[in-house]
Image (cartoon, rainbow, N blue to C red; front, side, top):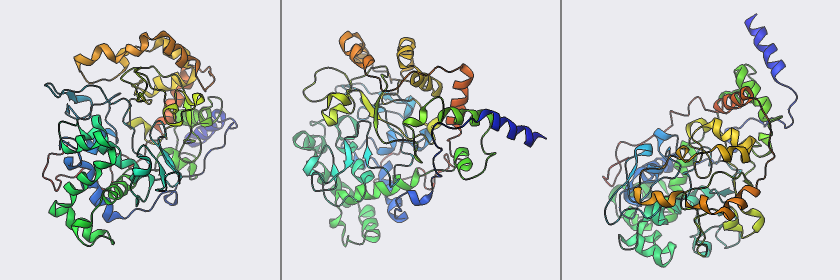
Length: 438
């Protein structure tokens, strides 16, 4: 009887979908990375040897304990101490000059074959434009031999001053990027290959490497990609089970939320396909704060999103549609982490203009840095800029009841994988450099 009632509830709560449900996501949808290279990548990912000042690793801002992210709206890279929400800005002459301008994106399923563009603004894309396989901030100076877009992506935090490189006067890497960013990659590669343990690992597991001296930055990037692409591959959620044929996999509330997601709420217009993203760019008028991802000639602390890459006015304030599996593990949400909860982010999608009026600064999770606080929200006093952002909204408002919103959140929570918290390799206990691990 209980099973019959459950089936009836699903039928009542599940009208015809306005958008088709995606096909199940499977292992064939992902790049097959070498597991031995992934083990090298795991060590490098948590090893501060890749940073200019040897004080931060990839894992500092993309940590296993925080769902592959950092739990902050806008984090602190160089000049920070601690992990996640406990991270603080250090004091002294080298204190940070600005926060990281965008939210640290989660790493789930970035090894999917379908992905051909990365970063919130899409400034890295598969392309033959420069003859190296990618259109990237490094343009023609991006080295040859990067096997995947994920490997190309791994190179850029290493050369970002406020993320991992440091200031020009602090170390050789920071000084090198002050001239041209690709000047730093040989310095980082030398640090790795002259470590005896890393040198031997690369010789053993990379067919084209005969001696440690052969290790180049592309090999390091390919190892990092092998780790990220396998470690955060995950598609065993309740929703995935439903798509695979288990019609009882979703709770009644999650099933109602799925009906709304693929129906009247219109979420699937952008969060479409097996990866639940159209891999395109849309303007949502999220609350603006922080230093912004300003262009070199733009003095305003604002973030124009995709336009910063495309230089097309129609792309202003548009950001890449995120994939949604394990979204419940990666708060806060939005390109700048404006919303601390899924409910808040859902409500903003349903009515951006009204949500903007209700948003308050306490919702932003920003590590304490008193000398930056005056500038954190200065963009909100620029009435013309705020008006431009409010006018550029690519989604139509949708009116839903509170219960509908709760059901949508229940569906989003059903996207959490059964094994999302138990990753294949995890965080290493030690790294070859002997440096501390966050």
